[in-house]
Length: 245
Ligand SMILES: C[S@@+](CC[C@H](N)C(=O)[O-])C[C@H]1O[C@@H](n2cnc3c(N)ncnc32)[C@H](O)[C@@H]1O
Image (tube, rainbow, N blue to C red; front, side):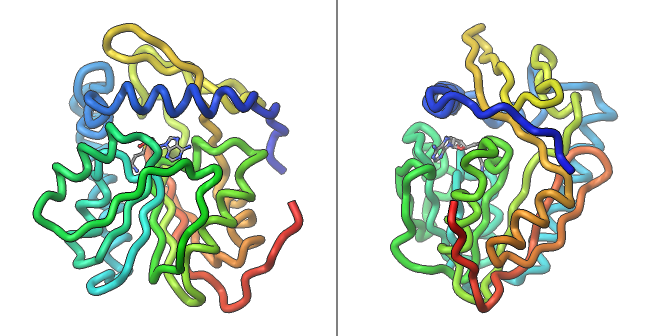
């Protein structure tokens, strides 16, 4: 059983998007462990080792020639990985500042970008695979079924699903951030210039995540790296339950 979390005010989803739009120029500092995200040499080494582990898991999907939808693609850190595997990527994100950086990162490759709000966007067709990295923890409980329904609706029967996010670890976030207390699914994030924003951050246990995916016909294996990451990967079943929610 997971702790019950208080629903968030809808305005937090707007503030969260405002945060990511403003954060775009400094976003990669988190992934590269620079500035406020530098938690020391040992932590950085472990981080990059674990990124390599996750890259290895993604590689088992053999995405060459596959038509992949990436939800909340950000600056394209994982888009570049999908492209390197030979996938044709359609990347969706609500922040134009993120999509600009993504296009620069994968310049010269055939990529489709869509600027859209994932809390209302509907996929125009199905894809061979759907990937979403570091977004599901920004989806509050009351929207999580909608998000998983979007994932399931976007991938063809028998298609692949790859959901990556942070495991709960204080060292993962910036030195001036505090992770949510029990029962809270929000936290305050800061930018380098001192501005701060309230966003959603909801960690889910492996069992909770697997069960939620399963309810949407996503048959996933949920696993974690030693410290930093949680991955749900698997396939969409032939029959996708349509839930009342
Ligand atoms: C933590 S970042 C992850 C980016 C990228 N997938 C990665 O792994 O680096 C979250 C992303 O979600 C996007 N985002 C936030 N709210 C959104 C919304 N309502 N609809 C679509 N994208 C949104 C942000 O612009 C940001 O790019």
